[in-house]
Image 1 (cartoon, rainbow, N blue to C red):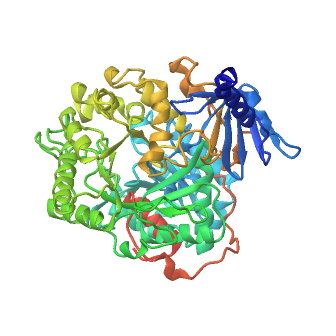
Image 2 (cartoon, rainbow, N blue to C red):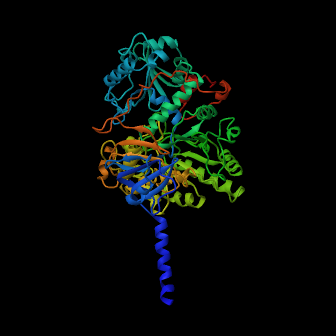
Image 3 (cartoon, rainbow, N blue to C red):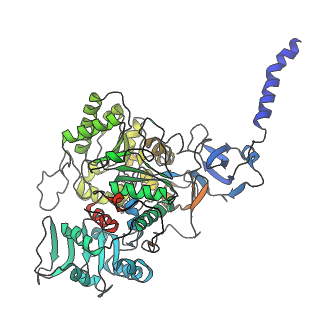
Length: 628
């Protein structure tokens, strides 16, 4: 009898093991296997297979265990040696304006485009004119993203050079900053700009110094006014279609959750219309600009729930909180610094250090209101002086409304100082940094913006890891393409266009960089229970890469491809070509934005103003027919 009692625990374990290996009550809808699976789950970092049912993960682990979920109708996805990861969660971008970018001729410099000089710009525009149906629909040939600092000529193009594209139809090229543009002779004629035209307040009409004739370059308000006259009005349904084009460009890069990081009320209404029409395939989370009128009225169900409630998407759209912008950009030398710029911009003194755009009292007022209403808040602060303002504001607001955690987020933090990091940790401010700057503008930061010493520490991810802090990384599209692999490469390697490493001590390992784009980004959005890692119960949001980022040489991360993007078990993007290196997307070749017959509640839904860069803001207001 005693012997039997001694065997009871062992028999119980055998019985339990048998239960664990019993076939599941229901088979899986799909199983992925035959390739590396990076789970981003520290307890079970890799797996041999994953099973999905009803859009959620039901099993992950050893092949034999997962295959018990295979039934007669289970779809088997053979990875063929490719690598499966959690879908990327966009920590900061502007998906609405990516839609406009997706419809434009791609004038970006390499590696995101092919424009290296004026001649290649002209040829790109000619191809766009020939291949894109939008030329007829808009009555305009246009491109986005040229950067005069990256052109061989080191200058803006001229009207005469754009006349080589067309002498009959207006041609417009928009600078990457969206603060400048150049038009051809037909465009100037349509705008009524002549040698006698005076500069508008806050703007400049470029003119030939020898003849006084306009040379086609329009700056600031002169450019914004021109946009309103050149672009046509789209219907609400076409505005939804443009948002879909932005979604398509994002999913090409493996993003399954997209952010619109500074929405105007009209953008929210467009997204709500898209959601109600069932037009979205990926999740979009919006953060309206709190300084716009009408934002508080948007913060209601079904699209908004405060941070006390688990995030709820309604047909793939939700409002996540609010956005506040405190300064400009370092590459444009408008970020608010404590020390002067290394080389001040033209017309500024040696003590010029940028400037803030919101006074201290207003910052405290916004943060206090956010805590009272339990609104998550994203704060754009590039310069260290703007970050000081943010820290001071949150400290004062939390003293007024203690005990409320809204996971406030620092967006960009390019010049975050080491001595500021303890304050972020103390106040629970989550840093979302922009190490992709090291590639695109790293040389410019070192040589002109910040100088060698400060430039080494832009987006200081290494300092954050020294304190054991989490962070996220982003692309800020359409400032750059929403290229996840460029984000990953820059976070790990911090290599500039010229091949120089900028900030060796700020590099992080590949797994840390992946967490910053998946699990930690899900945490930033209060979505860590449903996204960011491959675990049972979470959404089946996946990305398939051409190779394993943990095993390839770090210097070759940028050569990986996104092969497929999967949202809740359904494929929403598949790469067609299987050969060659990463190539820029063929922007500007989107289909005509015909009315799709989506249900809509009238033009009043699109009222509102203000977002992102002023030039794109004007375009969007013009396209959607809303006042500016």
